Each structure stands twice: as structure tokens, then as C-alpha cells.
Length: 65
Image 1 (tube, rainbow, N blue to C red):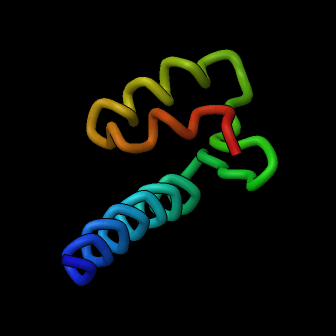
Image 2: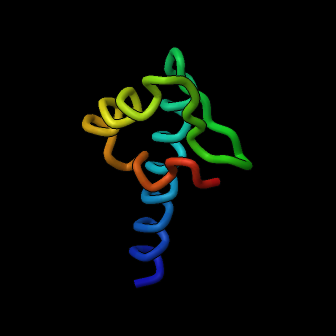
Image 3: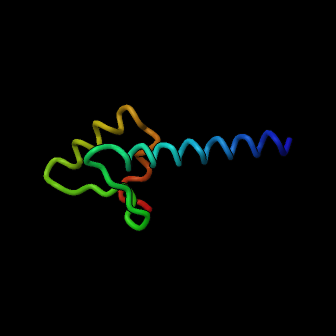
């Protein structure tokens, strides 16, 4: 049972890490460990929403460290 729990948590944490890393490496996006998914500029909200459609796991990190 413990292996199953470990695998579940490991894959879940890895998925979140990869989502944050992909977001931070995308052109025009920034992830700050103190402010989360940093959104700046007049169209930032729309751009983030468009990105989140294909990457829903990133939504919970919007302006959240």
C-alpha cells in the first residue's frame, strides 16, 4: 500500500512541477517563487486564461506561490 501512495504523490508533485516549469519557460510568461504565476500588462489576464485552457493544472498557481 505504501508504494502505491508514494507513487501517487510522486507523480502528482512531478506533474505540478512540470506544469510550472513549462509555464516559466514559455515566451512571455514568468513564474516567481514568491508571487506565483506573475501576470503583468494589459492583456495578461486573457493570455493566462488562454494558456490555462490547455494547461488546467496551472490555474491554482495564478498569483500564488
